[in-house]
Length: 388
Image 1 (cartoon, rainbow, N blue to C red):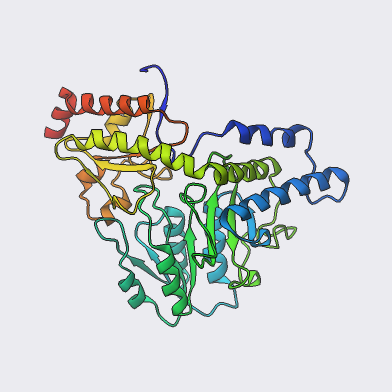
Image 2: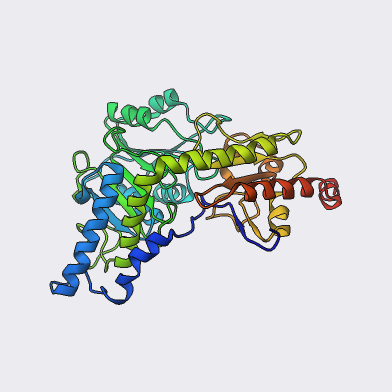
């Protein structure tokens, strides 16, 4: 197995499901029409786009007209946060988010601070969860939006979204969630959870990269009050101009269809795999799980190991794909902002490993990783490294 690739970084991106690829291929070569064109080729592409959008809507229990295709969750987040805040009809200047959000949210909020918005960054406890009472006490009359991610990309911690949305609405604020790690893995019903705005991507659920979606609740949010960031043609209800990426959209729709049919099976299989590696690694004296063990996505294990350096381990084991943080910042050798917000020291953060399991993984791969970690911990190099 030393010569084979062991891919355990599915929260960064998932491999493409072959069924998704098969659905996409005709739209590269044969059905290549622009869906905005009114001839037969264009109408055929438009039909495929509409069908894919219906698949997305079915998965999250929305109306297809409430969905906007984007290049990914990062763009969706930017459109939602900046578009709502900067629109001339908006008079509210306060936004609430969380210190452990994805950089797409945090960096967008930092930008909004430079143009006069007051951003409140809520802390989390050692389990990675917010204090809902503190949230309630933080909301003001001029709070435009509460923006809290559904599932954390580094720890898998699941926030109490239903309770959070009720609090936001009780005080007249909108609720937005980055559901990139949730959609396709757990039920994400926008009606049951009273969600106003939701962002997600295809490549976290065995679909193609470069395609995402923005859900805007037609009952609670007027699309005309969201300022578009890209102008030119008025595509996607005027919110995101540009020729639609039909093959990727078709792949997104197929990945949603597959996820809806296989979600329960995937959960059972993947949870067993995660429990296997978690139990093995917790046998290492001094190791512990980062984040809530009870309110956590079934595919994610973020574990702190004693006398361990995740960066060196990843460098030494080039056939194993695991992570020491978020994919958007993984190239930086620095402590995870998520783990430090949870109270871990810099050494503890750098000594933590994120293992995110997918439906294509096998138990033998988890056992192999466990063996490699134990070998690494017992190596002379690690012991010397930690005493320098």
